[in-house]
Image (cartoon, one colour):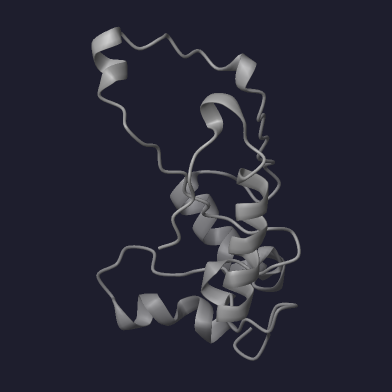
Length: 132
């Protein structure tokens, strides 16, 4: 496995580097892309099973239908305290590797795609994007 690379060129050495450098970090490994989970399956399957308690055949189901959320309204006092919202994008777009394997150019490309998407928001979702 040590000489394998995923389809974006992310290596097993890169996947384990953080944990080797920071031995007190808990798990300390990172997937470079969705393909890393297949390329390094014996490694990642064991970690996911031990840490998340999911077998390698388990499927994650996402339901992005906001109407199914149970979100009681804020009181007027609580609502008055909210002045901004942060949206964290922690995963990748389909044609890009995950964060640890992104180049600077790819990061800018992802940011531009996200900005284009959020600039279409209207109503209470409309806001201003501030790059960090």
